[in-house]
Amino acid sequence: MSLLQQVPLLQGLSRTCIQAIAEHAHRVTFLPGDVVIGESQKGEALYIITQGSMEVPRRSAGTALTRLGTLSNGDFFAETGLLGVSLRSATVTALLPSTLLRVTRRDIMSLAETILK
Image 1 (cartoon, rainbow, N blue to C red):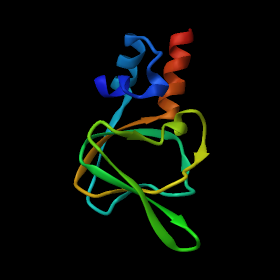
Image 2: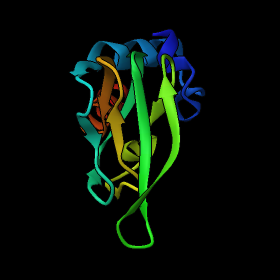
Image 3: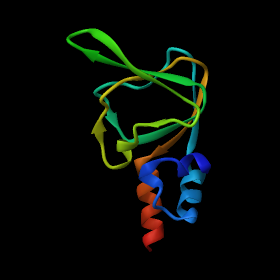
Image 4: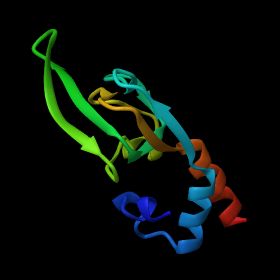
């Protein structure tokens, strides 16, 4: 739950809401070289790294890849996927065996409907 509280998009939510989101989060694992999200793919989920390391390359000037950075434990990415379906601006690939929490937009919308009733 504390990892979710670090995501700026979720910081204004109550402890009860954060707990509900945590209960709906899915643990997903990736091996080195696995692509978590691909550049220009539709996005609909937020990812938080609980263990491991990711690299963020992006295509520039044709086919050249530029490394934008690396991510590790506690880092998160793709949070704009919670706001609506958007195209990913970069690829995120596992550098090490990694475990992530995945929270989908559908889960968030379902929780919102439940809370608003």
